[in-house]
Image (cartoon, rainbow, N blue to C red; front, side):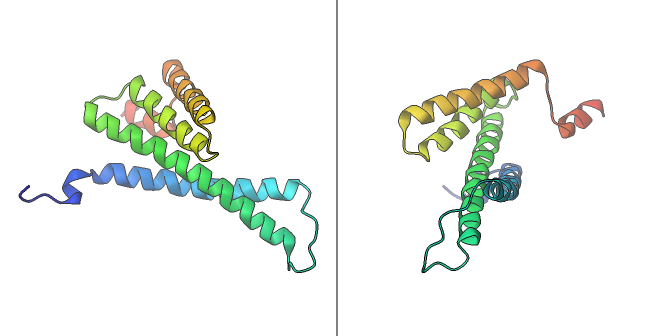
Length: 145
């Protein structure tokens, strides 16, 4: 293909929104992981481990941050890509994005059944939010102007 490059194939807006979603998920997951780690009892203190609670907290923060970053980036990326490909924004985009994000989360625990059910649950949640008209403030402001 003459004149083809990756930038021409991928919309900058999709990349930016996906990156923002991953960053927000990473930050929120880190904070939520820290809170969750502090609220539960720490592990048994090992004889060769310095600062066992700090190590445990870091692991829990990383786990939550990675999960929420992956789910957020997958949802936004799939939804934006489908909207661009189909040239319309509707319930189907959100449902497919919800299923993809839930399936990715389910596959992280290495279970097809969990992937299917978590994908279905997120797809249903996305459809219910779309049907009831719940929107984020950014979408509401765009609609009023």
